[in-house]
Length: 184
Image (cartoon, rainbow, N blue to C red):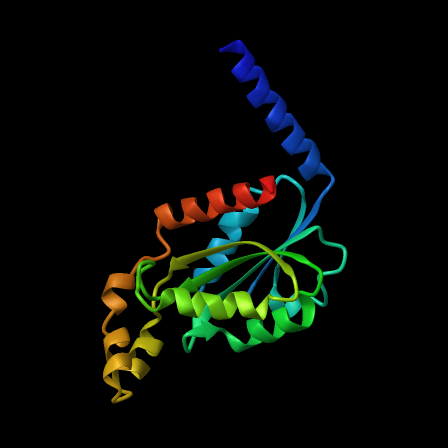
């Protein structure tokens, strides 16, 4: 038992030393606050030299050993500003993406939408992708419900089920994701 504890202690020490030499960015795009909550949860778990910035504040990913980049899904794909940012800045960079959306995590079409996020970051080295449900903002829900498209109306009607998301369990999953990514 002592040997196992020694090995675990040594592994934690090696990880702390690795993190101490790293510079990490947590960048995010958030319109309603969902993605910012997830960004803050991720940021809280990083022991390295770190920065938390909105995508608007980021000029480049140069100088970072790892960049966590977060954004919402919009129109079944990454938000356009995030997509453009990734396409222009991810080449040769180590990335971990985090994505918020209004649908439940098990929603049938979600994997295809998340693949579009991965495609936007294809020029970099993607080490992980985290996604979670966020609260569908009331103004967006109303626009969807008035669209006349039955599918969009259905999404708009999902709003009550999204209230309070991301909840603490989803934020804890985001924190665990950050720890896992830092260990890679």
